[in-house]
Length: 157
Image (cartoon, rainbow, N blue to C red; front, side):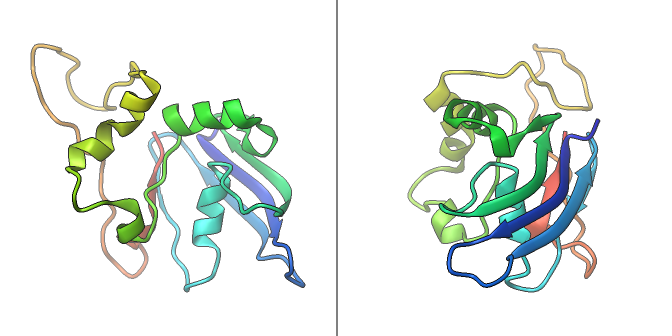
């Protein structure tokens, strides 16, 4: 089973004559890193937002968007909230909207845990699980090449 599985995604927005996304297929296995690369306005962000159930109001959607086998497009508000606080997250493209320079980066990293009062039992995929050692785990980064844009990377774990 794929961590993220998008099949035949088609999104039409109110007031548009034709779909803004049509026939998008994306499959991301656990531990796989995928880069979405394309021109401005090609649908990278809208495709990513579909995995969080963050499509614009009034959007008509066809196809399937599954995270760990569960269809995001049929989730209710509570299920979406649980998905967004425990399974899937997104760093939005506009750094002025995503990060506030008056807050420390640690605030952003702990905000979800603080708001939901939950702490997952997940461990980094590699390295010791010895609790006496304090070490930081950093997810792998995408190489900055024409085929891989670091601004459009998704790391599934």
